[in-house]
Length: 337
Image (cartoon, rainbow, N blue to C red; front, side):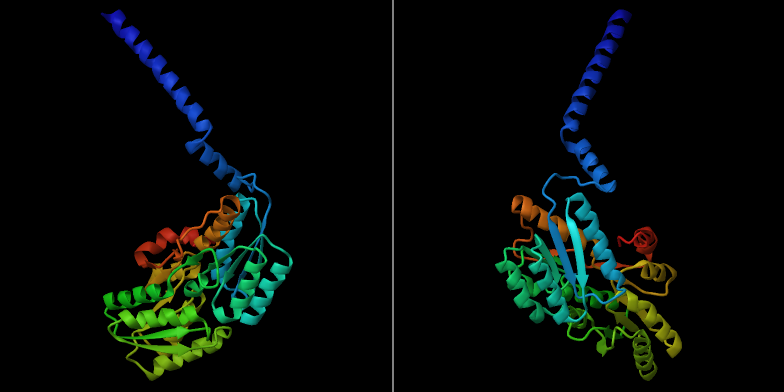
């Protein structure tokens, strides 16, 4: 009887070893191991594919020193390494100069274009020229409503109206009664949609305040003056992470108790959420916008794939509060959130 049990254990061990070898052989040609190998190559700065080295250009409406767009670029650069793409980037807050940058990349005959449509009318003709030249275009961040009409393959970002509505709902949860929505770039359709969306769902009174976003002292003094003149304002919503700390300073100088909330996330905003200086943030995950834009262009060139079915590929909104801040701080410090 003991001999039978020993023989059973030996047979079981042999079968287990054979099964393990079989599974290892399968995973070596695909599945988890193949995915791990591709990830390791990308992490080591090596392409994970053997497709041609195409050149993709991204042109945005960013001004200088905008940390949001730094995060978008980080995502795009990471995907470019993985996909064997040469990635080039240009930006200008002036719509006409942004359009000229796009034209310069068309003239250079890049293989794909990624553009933001903060001021869509200025970009319409040049996007059409890219299409005529046979260059596929993906839009990111702003211009979701115009993207399909302009002939872009897909739009990647958040629906700004939906994001604004989420802000209004969050303000209601916090029992706010009067809010100030600070627009730092006049003519930006996405900014208007954010404030309009918030006004749609907010049960209290929401007012707009237009400021010159390139002049932070002016931004601070404008918010400060508004808070001093109207003590009933109990919430200030900024439309970009760099403006949240400025609004905090304005609140302190005005002696106001208004809660400061913001769109977008960076390391400073994560810290402010954690220590209670800020109430909440609406994250549209800019890293994803850059990463997915490169990846989708690569998929289109490689396999004629298109995502979205004519609808935007949404990366937000995600409402971030104090309870989420600690977990996100690590990611904001490395520039991916």
